[in-house]
Length: 477
Image 1 (cartoon, rainbow, N blue to C red):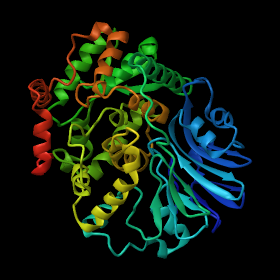
Image 2 (image 1 turned 180 degrees about the horizontal axis):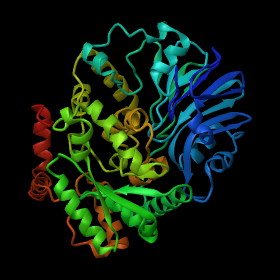
Image 3 (image 1 turned 180 degrees about the vertical axis):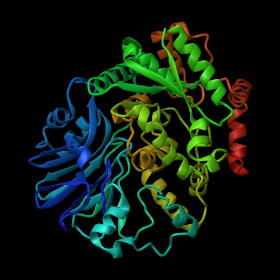
Image 4 (image 1 turned 90 degrees about the vertical axis):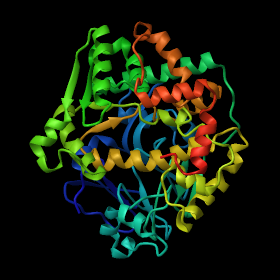
């Protein structure tokens, strides 16, 4: 067994041995991390932290200083309330009396798998690390897993294909003693807040998070024709000279639009755009795959492509912002488990429907508090599984940070009037851009033909009906 960057194994059952690993002992546990990641491990009397975290309230604190600023003798809810304001990717194992509690970052961007068949503590960044440590019985697949799920090794929320292994998902912690995955957020009714306050708070969080990042490493930021990258640019305007911006020229038809608009934006601000020609890289290194690359290979190739450009830097992007802006809406309020499975592109068989029904039944009480189940569907299934694996499996050598990966920030977005959080045309984004970079107002955002059609459909007030019909007749995708 060999450990690569961002990988870890923690066990109370076996002493961990691995190539390229640094081994530690703590509270009867054996801890192994990649030798490249020693500075990411912080051990206290009653906690183990692994990853990187940033505190917008104290942007000059280094990783271990942020972690040690928490009083881990407080009750669990008080600890969680402080961690809610952290951005980054991490796992946190806390010993509270005789209980071991496992937490991770707001959107599970550092993946965490654990064994649930006993009160023994076994966790790792990927399932194969667990069954290599514990034995082949932990690689046994559940009998009810459909073949397509097995082939793709797909997780549905916390459920993996393995009988004895589960995954930690956002807004939950795992209690090893009681063998329970417990939801801790949301925990109270949405408190509606003034829009101007919310927007000021969002700007403060994003600006200070970027300052915290720059305090540790140089920043590189993707810039496209879309909303998210422009918002991050706006919140970085005070320090724009310290950031390198790039656009990747890919095969996609909209790449030309991205390059053109990104060039115009930076020209106005007196900055140079780096254009990375991905197609040329593919032709030179993978000629047989230059036209089409499968999703799996594409991500590995992309990481190899990124490495020389982003070594010892943080690459920031706008992922996770979708959680706070009604990504799947508008759709009917009353949705079935079949609808939820279809929306996230899963099959509508018994295996999937049982999982989606269990999740939906659990979330029903929080709908009454004012939360939207589709926001949490995207957050707890899509973001934690798709984006989490993208960052920890495929971007092994590139550190990608999403400044929106902050539960307090997302909670602030939820407390804003829903009319400001439109997925395609978010009004709160427009207000932020007007406040911070009004000189860019005349440069269009997402001028693609498909987006313009949605804009017209919304203006004619037929978009919600159209989407509802497309859902009914399974024509959304």
